[in-house]
Length: 83
Image 1 (cartoon, rainbow, N blue to C red):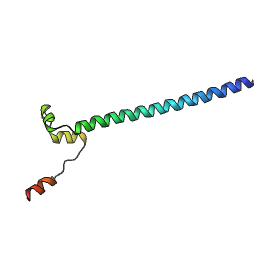
Image 2 (image 1 turned 90 degrees about the vertical axis):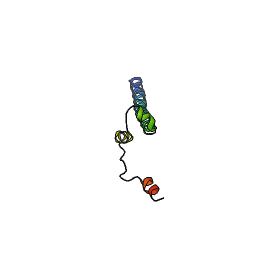
Image 3 (image 1 turned 60 degrees about the horizontal axis):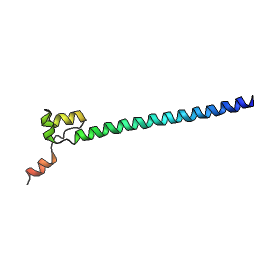
Image 4 (image 1 turned 180 degrees about the vertical axis):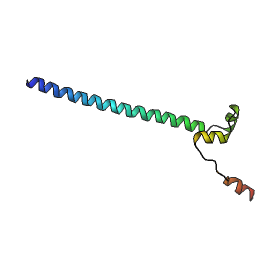
């Protein structure tokens, strides 16, 4: 009976370790997926205008897809107009 009890405690420990590793792997996989998505998003945000023209997309459309709000007044245009 003592051997059975000792063996069963060991299996629970192994199952707990395996479960912890499984959860850790899921967390790491989720982080990797989110990092890959963020990387693709930043590459899309950094595309030059000429590449957008090739696919028929304007910078305003790209900003809308990325969720950026277009400034109503461009600060650099205001500065340049006063020079």
